Length: 342
Image (cartoon, rainbow, N blue to C red; front, side, top):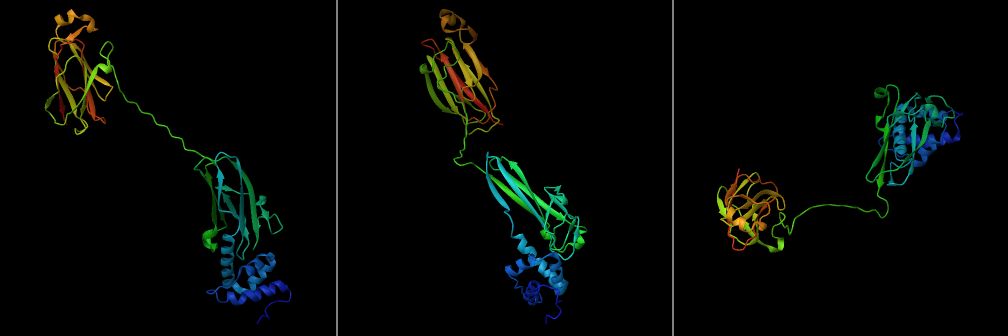
């Protein structure tokens, strides 16, 4: 059955053909092993062409598919890792093969979009022409020095294209490939984080007024819209009322009205806590102030009764503070606040 082999074909070719012909005749049941494929790849281009002439175009195409699969899984790594901050040399190897029975003139090989020069490739055909012969392999090797950053991925892709690829290349699926280099943190790596915030406490208020230790602290809730709510009355030294306004919607505005009577007192509104949005100055009777003027630096700002509409508009903070100062013993004062909901 093998009389068709010519006497000029070497014993190696004959043995290879004998082992392959029965397999290739039944393409749906391929039985060619790695050893047979490696023996075929070791042949010269002329010997390969002779085998292809004997087995015919259909079986040759099947052989090409098997060779393509074996070559896709061989070679260098598709992925590598390097350490961040460490200078590293990457070595890239690009291999182009002609798996068909037709020579290809000047195939275009692009590495990351840059055309590789064909005359710079190492060629197994033993020549430096621009023809990728049947079974021939062209190889380019080059180096890239990198210093990666944590989390970075260094991607590289390569493509090959022959004349009229869309109509003549029997398998476009193996015309591209890629690699990926992942940059990992160095050994003993760490994760630093810093945040900063600010808050107020023990605020003494405007100069010349009672200190925080002489200020009574009280809590209250303002949860009704468009209704005045009266605070508990107070007296000597300082009183600091913190109002919970958490149930009121953002965009609500606030008002205050007060009555310091005759002995001067001072009203300060803060929103958020620590940020003054209103300072009434000393309010009361001028005659009472004149008796102890040293207690009221800056003098009288107006009569005991007063009001301030639109103190502030509620934002993210859910509390406002009203501080009342009464530096003279025997003083009494009153105030009330109102929320104007949108």
